[in-house]
Amino acid sequence: MHHHTVTASAAAWRLAWLGGVFIGLYRWSNALTHGRGDIGQGVFAWERGIPFIDWTVWPYLSIGVFFVASFFVGGDRRALDRHCLRLLLVLAIALACYALVPLRFTFERPATHGLVGLAYAGLSAFDLPYNRAPSLHIAVLVLLWVRFVPLLRGALRLALQGWFVLIGVSVLTTWQHHVIDIPAGLAVGLLCVMLTAPRPTQAKACAASTSVRTASVSSAFSSAKAGVVFTE
Image 1 (cartoon, rainbow, N blue to C red):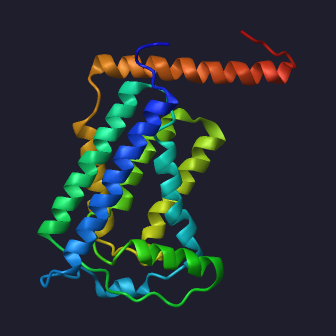
Image 2 (image 1 turned 90 degrees about the vertical axis):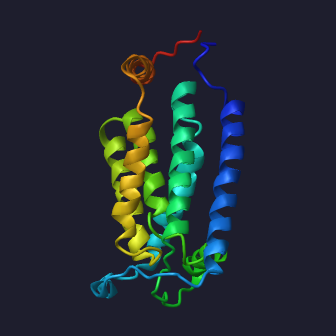
Image 3 (image 1 turned 45 degrees about the vertical axis):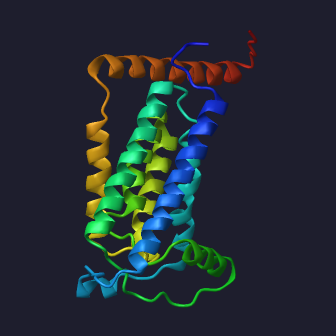
C-alpha cells in the first residue's frame, strides 16, 4: 500500500474524534450563548418575505451524510488530513465569532406534522436558535464542495452541485438562519480553504493521484460495457 493512502479504519478514527469535537463544542457554545443577556438579532425587516418550506429540512439534514462520507472519499491521506484541519479551523473561527457577536434567530416556525414534523423536532432538540453568524452549515458546505466535486464528472457532478446549492438555500427556507449568516459562512469556509491550500508540489501529486483514480474508474466502466471482466 502506498504510504500516502488512508485505510478505512484510519478514516473512521478521524471521523470519530473530529465528529465528537464538532458536536460537543457546538452544543457547548449554544448553551453558553443561551445564558447570556447581550444577544443581538441581526435581521432585516424584508426577511419576513422568505418563505418557510418545510420539506427543505431533508436537504438541510443531508449535510450530515456528506460530512460522514467526506472522510472516506479520495483515498489520499494528505488530502484527508487537510480536510480535517479545515473543519477544525472553520469550527474554531465560528465559535470565536459566536462568542464575540452572539445572535439569535428571531422567527417562530409554523407547526409541522408527520415525518417532516419529527425531523424538525429532532433538529430543535439538538440545536438552539443561536450560533448564527457565520453559518457553520454554509462554512462546512464550502469544505464539502471542495472535497467532493473534483472527484466527479458530467451529470453526477452537476447533480451534486445542484444538491449542494439546495442545502445552501435550505438554511434560509427552514428558518434556521438569517441572511447575514450566509455570506459570513461563505467567507469563513473560503478563508479556511485558502489558508490550507496545498503547496504546488503537493497539488501536482494530488492531481496525479486523482487522475489515476478517475482513469481506473473509466477503464472499469469501459470493460463492463464491452462485457469483459478483468481480475488481478
